[in-house]
Structures are given as C-alpha cells and as structure tokens.
Image (cartoon, rainbow, N blue to C red; front, side, top):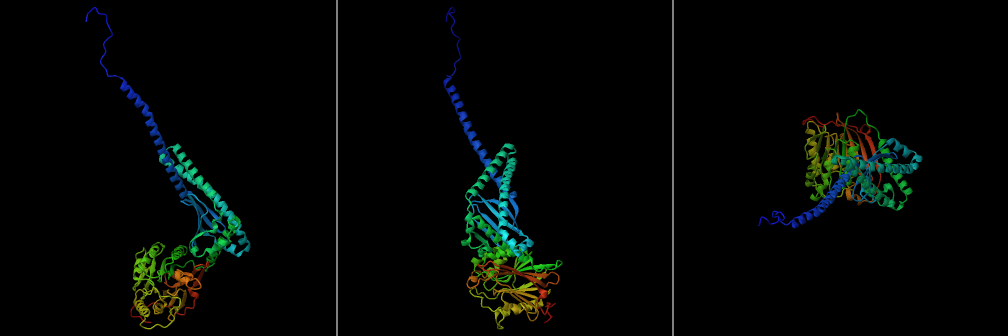
Length: 525
C-alpha cells in the first residue's frame, strides 16, 4: 500500500451475520407471551377449581355442624336438618315406629325430620280434649311451615359460613375465603331453588315406609283418600301427630315403679323368624326402657340354613348383652352365628353369670324347621317320660338344684321343657307357641312364655289374623334377684297399626309360693 494513498474506512473485525440471531430473538419474544398466557389460564382454572372444591367441602361441613333447627310440631319436639344426596327427598323419622320417606323434590339437598321426643302431658291433653285434637292439623301445619322457613335461612348461613371459614383456613387470605363463601352460597341457593321448582305436592300419596311403619301404612291414612292440596296434607299431618301422641300418652300413664328400686331390666324376645323389623323394635326398646340385657328364647330363623346366618349380624349392635338359646327352627350353625357376634352368650346347659344374675338354659333338642306351632297347647298336655323335651327339662332341673350359687332364671324354648323346672328356679322363660302368657306353677316357679317378636315372620300371614309382635321388659330386683314387675309391649301384626304397653306388678299377681333355690346339691324339695 502506498503511503500517499488516501485513507479509507477503518477495517472491522469479522462477525457472523446478525440476521438469523435477531430473527431467533424476535421469535422467542413473540412466543413467550403466548406461553405465559397459556400458563396463566391453566393456573387460573386450577385456582378456581380449588376454590370450588374448598367451597363445596366447607359448605358440607357447615351443614353437618350447624345446618339444623329444633322446632315443635304439635306436642312433638323435632329436629330438621339438610344433607347432600343425589336425589332429594324428605325423610321423617319417628322412633320407635320407623321412618317415612317422601319423594317431594329433585336436587342435591334432602330434608331430614327427626321426632326426638314428645311431651307426654301435652300429648295426653290433646288426646283427651276433642277441641285440641280438631285444632291440631292447623297448628301442626303452621309449625312445619315456620320450621322450614327457619331451616332455609340456617342452611344458607351455615353453608356460607362453613365455606368461608374453611377457605380462610386453607388460603390464609381474605379474597379467596370470600370467593369460597360466595360460591357455597350460590350452589346452596341454586339447590334450594331447584327443590322449589321441582316440588311435588302430591308426594304424600306415595310414601315409602321403613321399620314398623312398613307394616302399618294406615297410620297416615289410605293413599286413595289423600289429595295433593296442602289443606288435606295438613289433616293427614295432624292425624299422624295425633296417633303418635296417643302412643306416647299410653306409655306415660303406666304405673310407676318405686324410685328407690334398683332393678335389672331384661328384654325378653322370642320367635323372631327372620323378620328384620324386629331389630328396629328391639333396638328402640333397649334405648327407651334402659334395658340391661336381652334374653332370646329361640327360633331366630325359619330353617336354620347357613344362608340365614347373616340375619344374626345386627345382634352385636343392639346396645345390650344378648343371651340366646336355639329353638327347634334353629340349627347348630345358627347358634354359632349368634355366638360370633359381639356381646353374646349361647346357653348350652351350664350356669352362666351376667349382671349379677345366674342364668341356666339349653337349646331345643329337636331340629324341626318345617313344624307349625299354631296348634301347640302351650305345654299343657301330658308328655311321655322319654320325650326329649321332658328329658332336657329334668336335666336342667337337676343342674339348677345342684348349683351354688343358685340359678335365678332358666331359659328354654318349649313350655313342655319349662314345666319340668317347676320348683327348681324362681323364673323360667320360654317361647315357641307364638302366644304370650304367664302363670305361677304349682311349686311356685313363674312360667313366662313370650309371643313372637317377629310376628311369626311370613308364617304370620298364614292365619286369618296377623300375628302381633310381642316383647316384654322384666324388672328384677338387684338385691333379692326376684321379678318385681314387667311391661308387655304389643304391636299390631302385618297390616295393623296398633301399639299397646301394659304394666304388671308381681306383688299383685296370685303367686301363692315364692320359690327359693336350694343352697346345695343335698337340699331337696
């Protein structure tokens, strides 16, 4: 290069072409907002989904904790509550009779009405005063309407508060908590609106009964006589409350035992014959009469098959110890199924102590599942010496006379066996004949024969008159271990709606001899 050559542009370092890099950067910048927007949408949907889940869970918890109101309906004190389900209905529970389910509306909210207690004095006043009984339908209708309005307000408040509190606990911020409360309020309000729009006023025509009411739908009147208007509905409601009032008024007028008496309360049942309604009756009686233990004189099943063993499962949840002897319709498999349940004892010929009392009993030596008992003569006929029922009775009598301490109560199935224990024990319990009776035998032992607590099962339909459901509560003095009184409870059989409770006091019975068990094996009669 010549020194005198004019200067040109300064040389630059060699660099890659900027075009592709810039294009890549521009493409990156253009795509980032899209990805960010997509992520934002996804994140926002997830957040709202979480809020919805929290709102629904909180609303459910709120309803479970505080979604109820206590309100009087006539003489009854009821509790109304709202619960979630998939069909919506009204369930009226009337212990110990059972429940009535009405398909009144659609939607996810159901109304549960529980009759918790009934004022005996007010019930008796209504039954005794025709004026009060005539005014009961209007009063009950007004009470129900007022309770339902309160329930709507409480339901909205409880679900909203529950969702808001749970949202505050989960998110720790006010805005998400308010969103949860608002969503819960919207969902519950919409559910109540759906219930109102789908309300079926004629649902009273098609009730679904359970428990004892399954056998007595007549308690609310004939379906053909019920019209869908609210006026007639109020009359049926008043009739229902009136009939339940009569039941409670009857029980409230029973003779009262001395307050200072310490007694053991024994519920005596027999011949359930696979009737599932019996479990509801027994469970309610245990609760309402404060029963200490249950004695079953046999025939729990019809054929003693292994398939029937599942029927014994509710025994462990009846609320009291269960003493059982098998009947002639029960098999060894039946007895084993009972003994597998919680808090049970199957008597097999040896004395057994429970709650301060000594029991003795054994199952029926026969297994005759096809035998009919309606023509049995309550053990009054003469039996031959080689009859297995007589042999069993003599064996138990010998065991009772030799027992130290003495036996207080014997349990057998057939009254023929029971009569062989006369003079050996103070009290013997039997069943088998589906007809309740009691007597003091010649040597002073009281024979207590229980009727059918299952209404003889399906066999009760074979006669012209349904077999009543019968059970009894025995009151045994804890110090003397002697029977002082008993309540006979009778419920109308299949198709009937009657209920009676009758009190008997042992001191008023014509018992000429008070048996005292022998003190040792050498003592005689």
